[in-house]
Image (cartoon, rainbow, N blue to C red; front, top):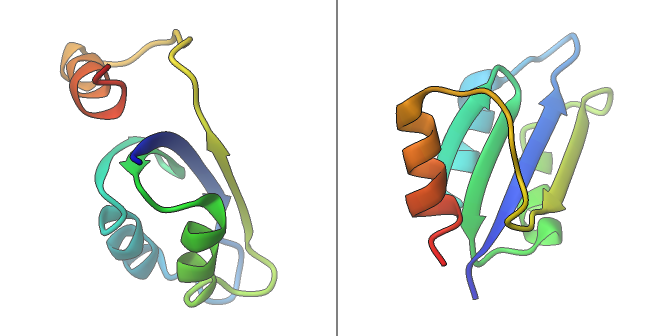
Length: 92
């Protein structure tokens, strides 16, 4: 079952492997990068699955937070971002 999640992280020194983190997150399913280190994804993976995949490229001093979302949201984003969120992250 596909569910919506938020992913937030801080890549601290020394490695900062942003490209590798981006590649892994993009492989989870539908995604949108809303802020520098904040993504929404719709995936069949569990938070544990996603964490295991990201831990392959994160350093020990990096932080990561993944949380399932409900369809109760508000904020500021572009019209295109809101359309994508409506259609790809919360399609029901």
